[in-house]
Length: 386
Image (cartoon, rainbow, N blue to C red):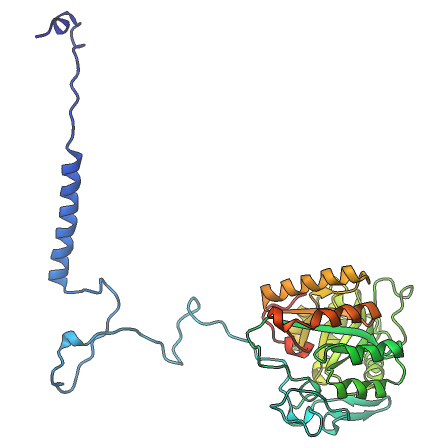
């Protein structure tokens, strides 16, 4: 015994460490696991490890085929099978966009050709006479002005992000209106002011060029009457019959448009009851509504969805600052939104600087992988704004 062990106090001798054979223990555990798995597979005879299987009895033997040659590789539910709320595919709402009518094209243009001109005469099937003039309507076959007067979107670039641009105020200045009609790409939608001069001639010229049209409707802003959009403005305080009479006066200013877009209207588009009456009337007449994006308080998208009125909202107002550099920056923002969401919509005014910047921007749009479409083609997008 070592001398230090003899001199150590009782119970305080040198302790010896016990080394456990961890490697041997680990190997034993692994061996037990694999042995258990092998025994289980040999006894249970289930190589699929518990996957759902189905057994089908055969009425007669098939030469050369045994039960081991038959297996279930997949189970697909039938058309009428209900998978339950967690697996059931979400229901898609019925599309509200245009069901393009071939006779909307200019006479002599086939539907499979690139669209150059649109019809310039009001279609009697979807028109009715009123004290104010011709009004749009839905015919007995459910044909809508939206279907007849919409510009068909090109299908050649179906997977490309889509951009729609609406240029408003067309008609207030004759020279600017002619510039917009002649210089802007035909897929740019033009919105005509109801107070413009020679609206009928302007409508015919714009549609013969191929432009889809909207009609601007003045809606009440918060600071009305200090800020007055114009005669026959729709006000939230109006009785129903007077509001509809004003709306009829506005809609009778011209024909061959697919819907309405607001001028101002921050108060009106945030007032549910008035907005619902207005949008229900547009649906009844087979028209769409485009929100110009001027108010962050607008609930037009929500109300339109509730009453099933065809709708498109604006993502970017291009010329709230009417300078070339500011407009160019907004166009880049519009492109980014389109690439992210698949569809983007812009509104603008028919100012010379705006027309010039849009014209320049659109020249190589397809080369950048983007497609310009009329606003009616954005109605059924999955992520509408506002």
